[in-house]
Image 1 (tube, rainbow, N blue to C red):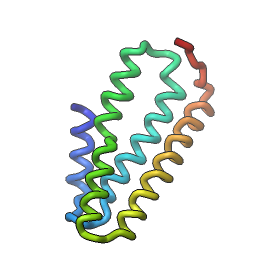
Image 2: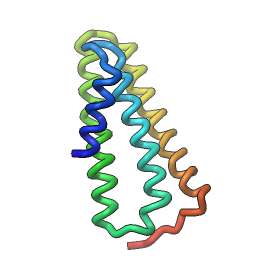
Image 3: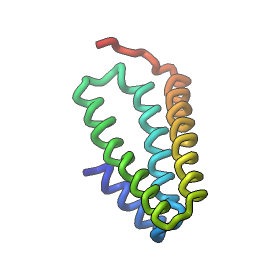
Image 4: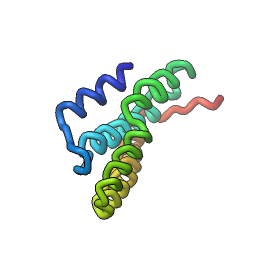
Length: 118
């Protein structure tokens, strides 16, 4: 509920019309990727499995959703703006993966990369 509420607030702050570039969705997914990378590299070795599931799949999973990316792509496709749809998909993949890698690096640079095998 927390992640979904935050995502909704950002969508309301940065609205877009049907067929426009979904900047709010892109920003949410990139920010969520960064936060998940930081969480994995700083918390995962220190918190129980249930807390990882609650934060990762729960809060951050509700904040960033694959379905939001797909819905935006379908809307852009329905508007027949294939170049904008392709740019949005590419930006989502490149920026999301880059943000996750940066989050992992930021967490590790703080000396918090002690992993727990389970």
